[in-house]
Image (cartoon, rainbow, N blue to C red; front, side):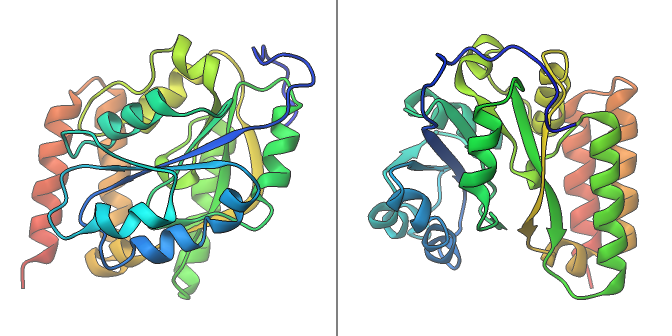
Length: 248
């Protein structure tokens, strides 16, 4: 599936230039480690952009020496933040990375293969950071679901050719499911380029809220989304469920 044919709008022979866009909010405890992990990408001449959603814990100040640009989106919604980063990006490929997700060491090699393919966009397999055997099962189902449906989530570090992203007018600025909504539109352009070397995403959410509870919540929200329920209603349901999970 990683060599599916589709239109690519880059000029033949144009080298890969990558812009990694990291939306953040209140990430002072982790932002330095996140950006240190991206240092090799910057050293290779590519761009890292941090887009802050109104942190008051010093996140932007900690990020500034370790990235190429720090922006403020004026809002915490990831869609708004990622669109703001894309507006100033200089790369011909945009990669959207959650602050709690780590790219594999093979990222640039994989994206160079993508860049010479005919695919319009792509995503990585995902691995959860926790050691529990259940997490290996969850990962397998997440990756298989994405492979079969051609739909990706933000945890999979979605990447897209900039002309395609601009033609589709970026993320729809909704409070939840912006990644699913965009990948559904991208799927009409091409199947995703699937990188099997996984990104590693923090399993804290699964551990704190309960793995089975989180699984059922995510599937329930996606089912309601595909049935046409508004993202605003789903965001309220998500926040309510998270609050209930955190109560003693």
